[in-house]
Amino acid sequence: MPPLSVRDVASLLLIPLLFYLFLWFWLDSDPDLQPGLFDFEDDEFLGRETNPESNPDVVDLDGVADGEFGVSNVVERVLCPKESFKLATMENCLPWLGCKEITDEVIVHHMLGQGAVKQVYKATWRGHTVVYSNLTQQAFLQDFLHGVQMLRKMQQTSHVVQLVGSCHTTLLTEYHRLGSAENIETILDSEEFSNFSNVRARFDMAMSYLEAIHFLHNSPVGTRVMCDSNDLLKTLSQFLISEDLKLVLNDLDALPEVNPEAQLFVKCGSREIKSDFVAPEQLWPFENETFDDSRMPSYDEKTDIWKIPTVVDYLLGNVNGSDVVRLHLFKVHQQCKNRDPKQRPSAKVLLEEYKRARSMLFSV
Image (cartoon, rainbow, N blue to C red; front, side, top):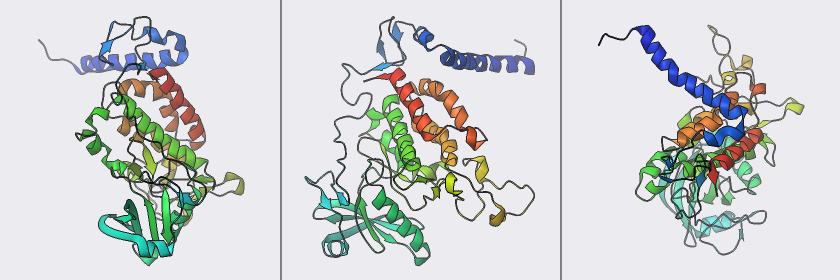
């Protein structure tokens, strides 16, 4: 067999690309035709037989054992009245703990981790496991206090970690044993959670991340931007993993406000950002010139939107059905990557598109 020419190789590579583009235009143009695409008897995506008249691109959970396609039987977090908390191991809501309770009743155990702003320890209060955080150094006092203030004002949602109490430069929060979301693949590879590494559980996880961003952009204290997100793992490290494998926003130390009506925009730090993960407007725009923060243009919450497709792609992983989800989100994710921030969708529009995809792909 003679060796293939460059033109032959290019032609072979072009075929799957054209097919992919055909699917994209077809799915967008006529949703009523979609069930015919995957019209076959043995559904490999689900691993079981399907009705040829149904849409095999939909995951039917009727009759499926709990936990096969997602995480269930986990009690939802109860939202307590203002300035109170209720841990999963508690029966009633109690007022936030103050200096006296923290000093007299909290027992600090081993360190869980340390960042620029906080040292984080595992601790117990009246037999309940909590997280005890202390200011690392005075230079970051304002960042620490900002994080505490954001926590106090953002408690009426399950998308933010629960505040237990605070005292000066000490902070108590809810403990999540699964830890940071940057370790999600390790968690899903573990024996305990290996059954949950499926497309439904991963899509729900991605939804929880998007819902947290939507909350930040529509919070009780205005539109907030996630500045501690210059790369993928740093972004994931801002979240904890709950028992039902949802992402919960944990680090609120760098959430500046955007208010276009007041001409209030943000810059994430005073140093030059060099990363292919961040939005283009976060990069120094003047080539061959030395970075000067005073000349660096500011930006808005659309920097968070740019990053969403990359984070979601990572969370979806490479499991059966994940490429089908990517296909349904392809167009809106392209819009997220528009170099013009004004042309990117809002978190609200994105969330509606994700809900639409969920209703098409999964039946509950």
